[in-house]
Length: 102
Image (spheres, rainbow, N blue to C red):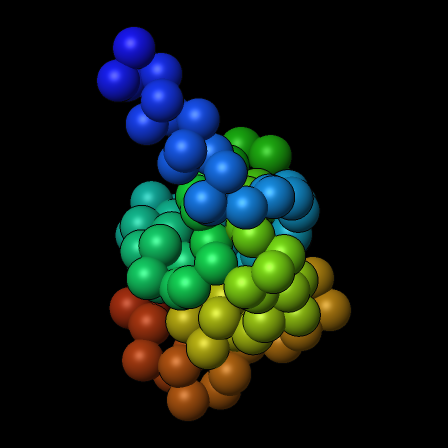
């Protein structure tokens, strides 16, 4: 009973979530780890999963009360990768290992 109450309470406190799919320029597992780690550290992002076999699309579950899609794309760009129409930040891209550069 306590577990059910905690689950219901957590769901209520965490707020609504939305899901967005963003095309990235990621090409390898190191890219995947880097992007997912940075998104995990971003307030409002509940979870993310980059699928390298699905044209490097990343699915992000987020709380729209805390973050919007533009900011999620900006985090990916600041990590060094393109995010849909948002180009990677050059300074961040230049710091990527050579295997991660398109």
